[in-house]
Image (cartoon, rainbow, N blue to C red; front, side):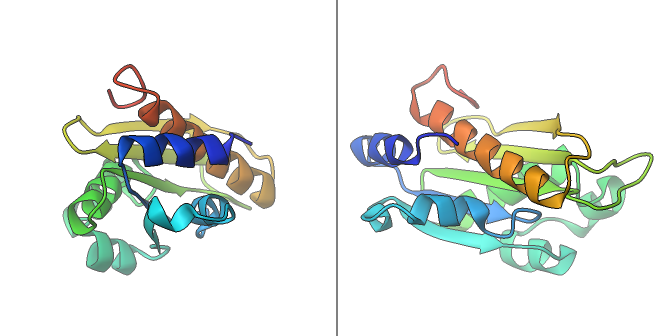
Length: 163
């Protein structure tokens, strides 16, 4: 797993607070960040928006976006991250939405996870990672780790993710 303490230290040094907007990981990114003592000066909030209704109500994801692309899409991940950034006094927000499994479909297979990273003053970055059918726990852990890597890269400077 990514060095979470280093992420927190970089955010602290930059004066950046973080919000998470999670679906398939159910709060695992926020938990990883808050496992470190003293993280409260960096981690502002973590939202678990598992249902489409929660994505709409808490993050402002548009019903039209959900209808057109489905919850597991870069478009929804982008709106989740943008919504968290807009609704919280933070400088950085990461979002995750995906199919942890078991199951999936021909069009949205198990292990497909969409991420977005929104930062003040930067274009929102979104990407899809195909982890494959690793099993529910392994997909969720891989998604958590990838989101933490995105945060770490974003805090590494302008050349990082989303910059």
